[in-house]
Image (cartoon, rainbow, N blue to C red):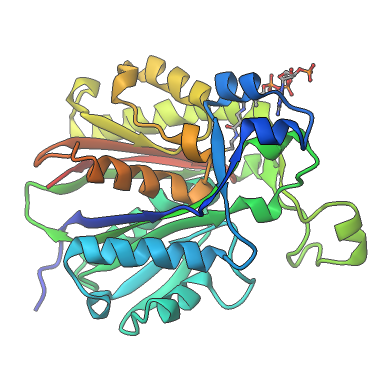
Length: 330
Ligand SMILES: CC(C)(COP(=O)(O)OP(=O)(O)OC[C@H]1O[C@@H](n2cnc3c(N)ncnc32)[C@H](O)[C@@H]1OP(=O)(O)O)[C@@H](O)C(=O)NCCC(=O)NCCS
């Protein structure tokens, strides 16, 4: 019989971003914006855009195979696949089922998780419950999005997002390694601050909705800033309190990548030197579900993570959804 509560750790990471680069300068020619403004306020220089024949599941599958390879497992060892996405290939079936088929991991149960920019953090937490309880041993968590498909490329808010996917394989660890704390939060009162109005059951796609551009995202940027800079510190301080750790104990923060200003303000509030805050929005912009696992994979492959490194994850997204986690790397 399996042990009933087990520690959970990350044993492999992978990521994939599409080849096509769209720079701020190119965007200046498409919408009323300013390259310097984008870089100063958002920290973005360029983003990746999926090609016409690349769906979210394609990005997700490539990241997934790299994460499985990195873990030393095979696709047959994966018990569960969770795909965190806000841009699924189709309304049905789940993108996770499509990924399961594309990577031929037929022993795995697969489902999608919807928490937008907090999706990967939520996904790691859900995976951890299954592993800690002994229900599954090896869980593949993927964060993947193609926001280029829900962007109105004639509006200036086209500057925020890019396409990309990252993945991690979670498995059980020993008593001194792995996740020390998770805190997830939802506040549905913020639900319309980032939304895609049409294409669901409330407002099915029609000629009218397409004409009005209601299948594109709508975002209240100021509300994202004001909320993010309050809820990220709140979640982070809570996981620090849960673990008894101090902010000085954190080696690297691997956050969602909403904008450089949100992260700078958050770091200032929690008292974390900004050189411990990892970023890559300059290259990829905000890839929503993809941000944390892409960044984690880069930090991992750069060799920064050592046995016992203490990592802080934090995310905020549409819903509102938000949260934080602390992990002892091994
Ligand atoms: C985007 C953000 C910097 C805009 O700040 P704001 O003060 O709320 O925005 P406003 O719409 O009032 O615009 C203020 C000025 O910024 C500039 N601006 C805003 N959006 C711009 C864009 N896309 N390109 C160029 N300039 C822009 C304009 O100069 C504008 O002045 P204007 O009124 O003369 O047009 C800020 O809201 C923010 O950082 N939000 C977080 C967004 C985010 O992280 N989104 C990711 C989703 S998780």
